[in-house]
Length: 316
Image (cartoon, rainbow, N blue to C red; front, side):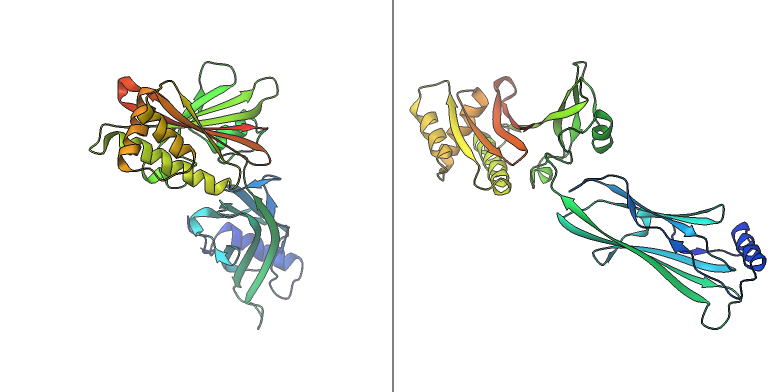
């Protein structure tokens, strides 16, 4: 979508010219802009928002060119994510933006115009609107607890009803930084309180297969990588524990060493990974934020020679 609009020999130009003549305007005038509106009260990290501005007082004159430019924190938004419409004598401006950092977000719309047959000094005109918004971290993935089914499915468009009341399933990217480069998609389960239409839990899982040259060691290493990444996000809240169904010391020693945040040898990683796949041992790590409880663990799938790595977020 092109955002630099040259308007000539069209209804827009004719309308503006007539308006100018009817009012006896000695020269063109730029529109007055509304404040910048946003489509939601609370802006979460990673959530796409829609920013809009309208002409509160229309422009007058024979317009040759109009160029709306949106910037966020001084960086210009790509034109493919902006849109301009002119209808009934007034312009409207739209910008789709997905914030990538928490904190203040300074949004600015600048509209540059060139008018035909304008008196000296009035051919080029610029108007602008500015607003400071705040971006906060979401409770889980790109959602807030209490979001409705409709809002959630807008943010996770692949979700479908599972057949169980209040449960929606689908696939999407992993919320664990770096995992998407290893696993292009993960399985998602969203749970809502049906009576309140309120999101209360999100779970994501993916299979770590031992059918590789590094076998069981890969399973444990992938779990270790994902867990350490999560622990950097929930600093100081992680608690690891071992859940075992065996008395074999080789599996138990490896699991206990891992739970104590020790560095495992390749052999110990292999025992831990084998224990995870066969259901002999697993690690359960719990973390939390002010709004969210987090559980990170594995589910054994020996028939598939893999372990499912499972991450569950739930509302406090």
